[in-house]
Length: 76
Length: 431
Image 1 (cartoon, rainbow over the protein chains, first blue to last red):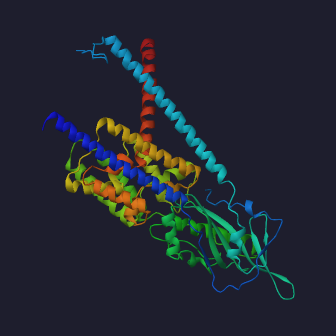
Image 2 (image 1 turned 60 degrees about the vertical axis):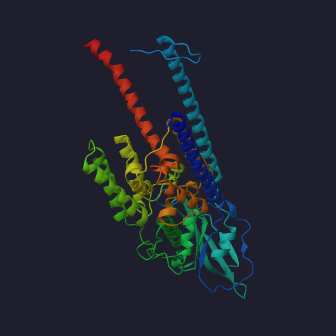
C-alpha cells in the first residue's frame, strides 16, 4: 500500500470516528433534553372510597406557597 | 546532539531561538489553561447559586393537601408545618378529620418530598410525591410497582422500613429508601405534634451492610493490590478479568448500582443521603477518591465499572484495539470534558442530578431509558466490537471528573516536591 493510500485510509477512519462520536453526542443532547423536560406527574396512593365533598376551603391567612418541606432528621 | 528544527519559512533556527519559542508557547498554553479553568469555575459557581436560590422555597402545597385529605371541609395550617383537616357535620359542628405533613429524605438525585395525610389516630390515608429530582424513567418504576400503596393504612407505630414491612423496588432502591424515610418522618412528626399519648418508636434504622457493600469493598481491595503487582503476571491478568466479571454481574445486572454523574452532582449540590441506608454510596465515592489519591490511578473505571467491563468483554471477542489518533483524540477529549461540564452545569442549575446523568448504564442493566439512550447503547455496544471501550474513551462524563482527582494529586505532589527542593540547598549550606 502506497503512502497516499495509507493516508487516505487513515483519513477515512478519522471521518468514521468523527461521525460516530457526532451521532452519539447528538443522542446525548437529546437524552438531556428529554430528561430535563420530562413531565413526571406526581403520584399518589389514597385509601379507596372517599366521599365527594364540596371544594376544600383553605384558611385564608396561611401562605401555603411558602411552606417548605421539613428538613430530614439525618441532617441532609 | 541538538538538531535545530526548521521554522515556518523553512530556515533553520538556532538552539536559543528554539528554546525561546518553546517557552513562549508553554507560557501561552498555561495562560490559556488558567483562563479556561477560571471561566469554568465561575460558570459552576453561578450554576450552583442559581440552583440554590431556585429551590429555596418549597412547592406550593395547596393543590396537594386536598389530595391527601379529600374529605376535609376546612384545612388549617399550623406553624410547625402540621395541617389539620376539619369536617362539619349537619349540625354545623366541626370535628378533626385528619392531619397532613411533609417529610423529606435524600434519594438518588436529591431530596424527595412526600406529603402524608392521616386520620385523627395517625393511620395513613394517603401519600403523594410533591417534589423530587430522580431520574424520571427510574422514578416511574415506583408507581408501576405500586410501591406507594404499601403505606396506606399503616401507622406511625409501624417500622415503615424496606426489607421489614415495606418491599423496595429493585433497580430504584435509593428512591424507595428515600420515599419510605420521608413518609416515616412525616407520619411520626404528625403523631408527635398532634396525637396525645402517641408512643413513637425510636428512629434506630439498621445500618445497611450487606452483599452490595461487601462486594464493593472486596472489589476495591482486590483491584488495589492487583494493580500493585508489577509486570504482566497471570495473577494480574486473570485477577482483572475476575474483578471485571464481578463488576458486570453484581454491580451491573444484579444491583444496578454503578457510579454515575448523578452521584457527583448530588455531592456538589450537597445532597448527602442518610449513611445508615446508603452506606454503599459513601463506600463508592469514598473508595474512588481514596484509592485514586493514593495510587494515582482510578480503580473503578479501568477495573470494575460494569459498563466499561462490558465494552471490554465485547472488544475481546473481536480483538478491538484503542483508536486514539493524536490530534483528533485530543479534540475528542475536549468534547468529552465539554459534555460532562454541560451536564454538571445543567444538573446544578436545575438541581436535577438524576436528569443530568446521561450515561446508558441503567438502559443496559435495568432496561430502562429514553429512546436516545437506547440509540447510544446500541452504538456503543456495536462500537465496542471495533474500538476498545468507545464510551469510556470518547463520551463518559466520569472519566474527566475522576481524572480531575488525579490532576489534583499531581498538583499537590509537584507542590510538595518543589517545597522539598527549595528547602534542600538551605539545609546543605547550613550543614
